[in-house]
Amino acid sequence: MKVINLISGPRNISTALMYSFAQRKDFAVLDEPFYGYYLKNANLSITHPSHFDIVDAMECNEDKVVKHIEERAKEQHVFIKGMAHHFLSEEPAYLQNWQNVFLIRHPRKLIASFAKVIANPTLNDIGIKKSSELVKYLERNSREVVVIDSDELMIHPENYLRELCRILDLPFYDEMLSWDQGGIPEDGIWAKHWYANVHKTTGFKVQQKQPAQVPPHLGPLLAEALPYYESLKPYILKNK
Image 1 (cartoon, rainbow, N blue to C red):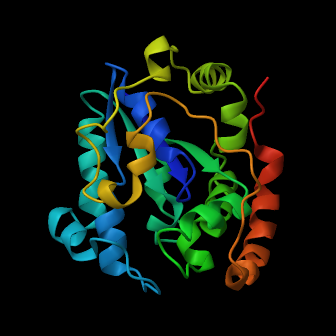
Image 2 (image 1 turned 60 degrees about the vertical axis):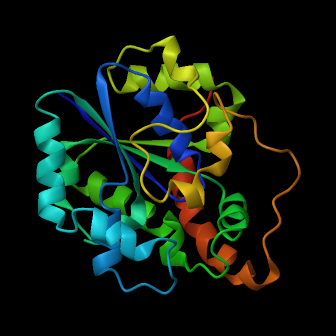
């Protein structure tokens, strides 16, 4: 069975992709299974909503999380929706056993959205640097990576998902394009803080067209993030 590991930054429509795969009968989906491990072990510069509830509710041992994922994959394909910065190791060897899909978004849009929940994020909080590092790590070990972009996906979601499924050697199902309002049972306990917008949707929702406004105090963060985004741009799967 396959483990499809979506490695994203926050506010990148990763939850919508998780909902998409949750519509498939051949997949189990896991919502940020490394989040508790990350909160317990990272040197955090910000306070995450429901921090202690998450740590109390989740497995916080990395090896045990990996073991659980691989045990699930003996029974059914597994789709992991995860955040790049939750992988604290510089070289998480277990990623070499999985099919890794990196979801990125222009940092201007990412930071503008993230700042609505957490006012003062740092480069380590938004995942783009870690995504760039993990792509390089996997390439050094001759592992294939797929990089998708939220803006590209939204040009034509069906075309993009069909192409992604082809690359992952999966059949595409029309059911992946829609879901019921209000969330899915697999939502993490942090959903009440982060998933309000996607809970109102029944499919991939076209984003608003107005330019994203980064708060002035986060201008330096945008400047820090841009080189990592630029390093990943050549890898982006285009929506044909």
